[in-house]
Length: 476
Image (cartoon, rainbow, N blue to C red; front, side):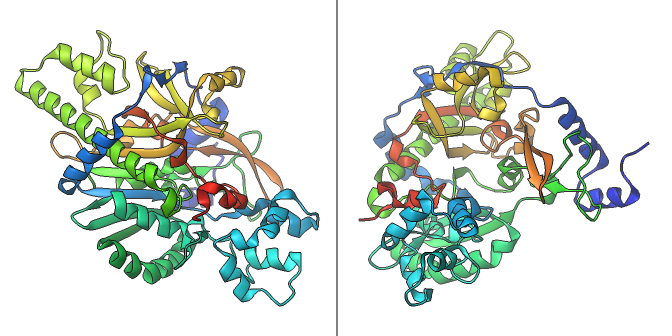
């Protein structure tokens, strides 16, 4: 007997899902996902490489106008977690360290000028914080990070979105055109459009470029059903099923829709001001130059294979040395070569939470380089993260075309067994939620992967509001 009613089936189909997909999701909740079979951490000389960045950057700048380039920026969701401590202060009335730091340093934030315009005279501490995060003021607690003012300048204080426009003009232009794609939440589309209408003319004039901005939303059919703690479907108070966004791994569908030769990927909050952007520009260009050269060698080998004149020894050596894949006698080198390519900038691990580069044994016995997240590691083996020297800050250059110029179907290269199950809650009720394989780990597990060490100052995320007080976000 089915656990789903006719109304449930209509809801499932209306969400763009099939019964087979939902039943598979329920099975995954019961069985769980296998942990990554990690062989060792990737280190310099064994999975991580240094590159002559100046040489690679020059190569990229000389050749980029022959490529269709897109900068892809995951920018969905509100910045609520960024202001978590401020909301706790408003709810409890108890001062905490983060809120005190904000109050003590208000004039150092790029949003200070906007805040001063709406604050009442002799505002109390509560009024200041309420005007910053609440709907009666700047509403920063409900806006996406893209629309928050991050950095102060003499002429204008820039949002995170504007910093990506500036970056894009400096490394992602081709023939004077800068294409940037933002993934957004539907409720924020009007805010994005309003901001872009306001600022695009300024940056087009400043950098003498034309921007082509596109946006997409996470596809509803990538959502996953939520379950109770006993793995039965979780129902809302009105009896309907609860579907939840399946994490950033669902964005592989959005990325798959991008028509480009080169795609730069970088998170919305990982930006820095002009005076600190030197290494970011050098290494973005350098990673892309390396990707160009490696891709061209792959294409040459593929054409040799087609012509029947390939040097198999040279191909095997090239794959092992360059593509993060250990070749054995059983390796189908054509299949390995003919995959999407990504070059990933990674930084020294300074204790940041998140994934890193490892050598991972696949179900078929192959050994390849992967980005592994903590949730993919058996809890009894979690200490292996300490063996890793590097952290993955989501700094990728992607080459999504094959040697014949066709765009790969990126969904063909997803490891569907690299998902996550986490405990969440809704309206005070506990539930279990499923996330799809992450965008840069499981969703790209079947890609050829190159890890390149990059400087620490190429990674400047903003996870809490006081991160904006760090030197890496101060423009003076």
